[in-house]
Length: 276
Length: 286
Image (cartoon, rainbow over the protein chains, first blue to last red):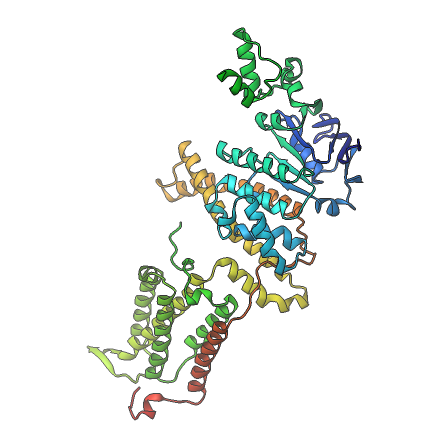
């Protein structure tokens, strides 16, 4: 078997806004090609700081970040940014264009894509995120979820191999959250090489990821499969994070004396099991 | 806050809407010049102004601007009309040609006073209507792009035309967002007991600081996030960019340009050649 290609590698990263207290303390991890990794942590766990460091908006005190094998420094910053896409938290503050089409075009304009090709690219990616009918719409007439879908279309239009979602669903209502989750699942299905790092405090979203990284008080406390984390009270309890609904159900059933068989591992199989 | 009729875009797909914004900007300026070029006699002035007024009215009609909005934008002129009349009546011109309107025990008021005031009011009304055609039929963003096009020659002297256009278009893009912020802050402050509506002027002003300061803070936060997002999407003002929106001149644009140029040229010719159309027709008018 071929060794997985590492797209992002973080080595011994530390950062402190003040000298005595580190917001991020010796964090190391890597993300491989085609993976969907969720980075979770409570408020103040350092995940926003890590996001800023990854985007090159802050410079680390110690440690290094490598994207595609290149160190993230002043020299490589622009070429790296050209290959990664970032979807931010606030739907309004990343909507640059005056209409949906203009916003998707913004990244293309920056990359000097010829004007003749733009319309086709814009239409195909608006279609991809289900916003074709809204190309002429202005941001104030769109819902938060729609704005985030436009942001994703703008990112996808640049054909990145790596997308970072920085709490992209935190400001959305449940409907918008569901829209984005469905879209991301579809994107991953269509392009298995697409790598996603999702910084989130949505526990359900983390539970769907291939791997979770858990930060607590600036330190990495867990890296691995989501079920090994949420199924193990000794690890998750000190982090103060909530648990996905499935695990709450599982515990509640156990308390009633119903032990679930091991093949019941998510909500769908649980629903099926209970109905039987 | 949302009640400005002047400068409001009217979403509709009329012929005037479809004209190239660059042509519309040029046409507006040309018509404004034509409006304010002084004609020699009252009769000629009112003839030329009247024609331009009817033209502006027709354009507004074609662009589907509501009659009510036109009246609303002209509403503030009432004060000016009265002010001008008073000035012209109290301070008469030296030479009066239209005769005496009334003579009250030596206080003589000439018809010229009314004619002069009428001239200025007609000009202002036409001016407002012409600019209204521009703003009602052109999206702010297209206006920005057109202005950028006009500023392109200034790039030779290192004028940052593209950056200015980007700044203006972002400012326009964020107006609704900031209005939304403002109403949210107002509601939040009102629920904490800040009174924006009652009390003395000073109390109202101090009440407003409870609105302005949070609004400032939130717009600074927004601008920082926006700058980060733009940077992460590869925006570099010093780098060359391509454009999604470009303009192409159509036949209707050229025709519009010719029409406006002909009007301006006609007005200039009338003025430069001292032509009095009424005299040509054999009417003695003043």
